[in-house]
Image 1 (cartoon, helix red, strand yellow):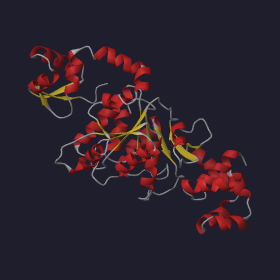
Image 2 (tube, rainbow, N blue to C red):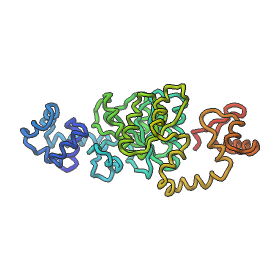
Image 3 (cartoon, rainbow, N blue to C red):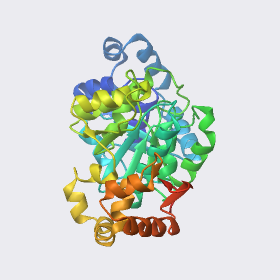
Image 4 (spheres, rainbow, N blue to C red):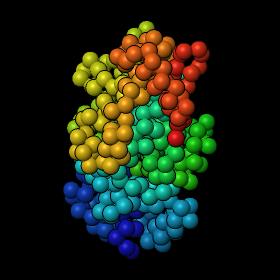
Length: 363
C-alpha cells in the first residue's frame, strides 16, 4: 500500500482519537509499522474495541475500496506531511495526523480569525458577526468558524462573498449535515468555500465531539473573536483553546442586562481585548497591517476624511444625527455631508429621520 493509504487506515478506520494516535506513533513511528505488528502485541496496546477494528480492517483491499469511495464523494484526505494540510494546525500539540476536507482547497491567508458565539443569538449578535466577517474578509483575512447555527453561520455568510475566504470545522463526519437547519449553508460552503473535519465520513455529531473540535477552530486561526456567548458556552472552550495555543482572544461587549453577553464580559474581565471595530483586531497584528495592500489602501483612502470619523461612530445600534456629530467631533454641516455621502455609497442606512445604522451588506 502507499504511504497515504496507511495513514488513511490509521486515522479513519481504527476509531482512535488524536491524542491516542500521538501516543501510538511514539511507539510505532509510522502506521505501516502498526499495520505489520503482531496481533499479540497490538492486543496488549489497544483497547478491546480498537483491537477489534484493527483485526477487521487489516486488509489492503478493504482500505483501498474505502479510500476510492472517499474520492468518489469528492472528499480529500490530507496528511500532516502534505503541503495542502493547514500549516498553522501543526503548531498545536495534539494536531490530527489526518484531516478530511471538502469544497475548495484552503488557501492559507496571512491572517486568520475565528469568529464564534451563541447558537441562539440576538439580532444584534448576528449582525455584528456578519459585519466583522465581511469587513475582515474584504481586507484579505481568512475567517474560520464551526458551521453551527447562530453566530457561526452568520460569520460564514458574512465572509462568503469572497471565494475561499472562510472555512468551517465540523464536530462530525464531513458528510454529515448538522444541524440540518444549516443545509443550504453547507451546500454553499461545499461549492465555494472549505469544510474540514478530523472525523471520518459517517461519524455522528455526538455532543462530546464539539468541544474536541474547538481546538481545531482555534488551531487554524491567529486570533479568536467571541461575538455573543453566555456564561456557559462552547465558544468559551474555543477561547480557552486559543489561550492554550498562545492565540489572541477578542470579545465584543453587549448590554449588561443580557445574559447572552455574560461570557464575553467574563472574557474581557480576564484580559481578552474588548472589540468595537475591525481596527481593534488588526492593531494586534502589525505585521499583517504593514504588509497588506488592502489595509494600506483602506487607511490612505479613509482616515483623512470626515466620512471615516462618522463611519467609525455609526454602528448596528441606531444613532441619532446629534449623537453622531458629538461623538465624531465634527460640525453639523460636516456630519450631515458625511452621512449623505456614506448613505449614497451604501455604507450606512437611514432607518428613521436622522437615525442611522451601518449597512453590513455594502459590497
